[in-house]
Amino acid sequence: MAIGNKQRFDLYTILIYAALVFIGWISIYSAAPVVEYGSIFDMDELFGKQMIWIALAVVIIIFLLAMDVKFFERFGSVIYIISLLSLLGLFVFGKEINGAKSWYSLGTMTLQPSEFAKAATALAVAKYLSGIHISLKNTRDLLITGFIIALPALIIIPQPDPGSALVYGAFFFALHREGLSLWYLSLVLVAIGLFLGTLLIGSWWITLIIMVGMALIYMLSRKQRHKNRLPKPRKVLYIILAGLCVLYSLSTNYIFNNLLEDRHRNRIDIVLGRVEDNQGVGYNINQSVIAVGSGGFTGKGLLQGTQTQGGFVPEQETDFIFSAIGEEWGFMGASLVIILFISLIYRLILMAERQRNQFARIYGYCVAGIFFIHFFINIGMVLGLLPTVGIPLPFMSYGGSGLWGFTILLFIFVKLDGHRMSYEH
Image (cartoon, rainbow, N blue to C red; front, top):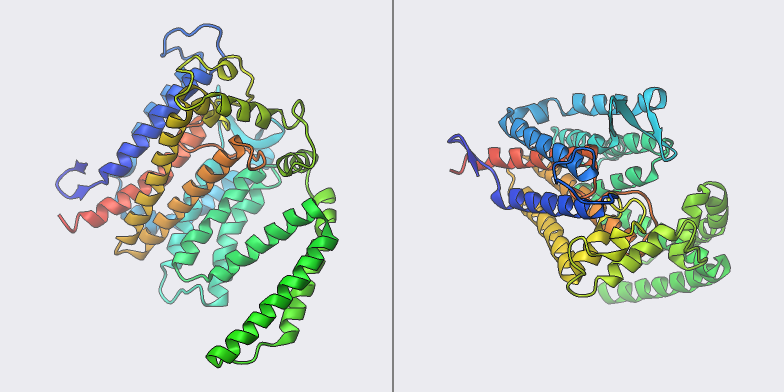
């Protein structure tokens, strides 16, 4: 796709975007709680309102692609600061919906600034890391980068909106591409594993597993040392590491019972199988799993899903939109959506790797990471594999803020990539 004679925009990415938006709108039309389906342009219904958001998203795309590409790098920090101010303003001017003060009320519509903060943070991270003499191997630069990423998340958590804050873990992918060791990710995965393992089998069993595991690792390291003539492993380091893991495991129950809210504890308990609550907190997940499972291979057909048409899945047009696809389009339709998302993420990585500008490459990896986290957590949540944390499915869940936020996030990178291509054609 070309605009003018200088820039060529990645057609594959644009087509995938259009396909996901279209499938999302059809699914919202199907999942919308209406008695009788009238005109698709009925602006009193969710699907009619979504058409307005889609039309305005097209305007946003045209605006972004027409902008000077240098604007994003030059004003990335300013955009980030404005985004932080918009998040802080919620504590004073925000509108509370479903127990969270995450929206601004603008007449008949609401705006959720956290959806736009992801793009702003990606721009800020890309701008800082692309600076001269900046390296993640430098402790100071690493801490500043971590602060840039953590600050909006820390503002979002007390709204409370832990789901949106969780997405900021996606920036690890960009940091790893720029030199951050996988050791940091390993620490996070070990912490999650110890936390969940302690909840499932208890801290004493986890302590035994830690001791045995650390002893095996120590013996293997000694064996490798003799084989490859490496320095002798320090036993005290393994003892300290094992002790820290044990202390963390022993503190898990206190963290779980005193620092998490009841609804989050209940959702984790349900996913881990510690409790069954198909009529209470677990109702959403249970009905969602029933809906997806009942779709079979080819689905029940558009507007024919009993769970969807009966309104049994709460919030189906937003966070649980994938369950409508699974029921009415079946395994084939659900697989198509998954393939489209995987294709988009893979395409974004390829586009990021071909960038000659470090700012564009870092931003591209941030975008790919954010889409992956949203896709992975939302699908896992709908299938009952992960707790319900209120993360929308990009381009498909109902809502103007989400659609516009993801559109801005994606098409800034399409613009940056188009600018690169202008030098090759």
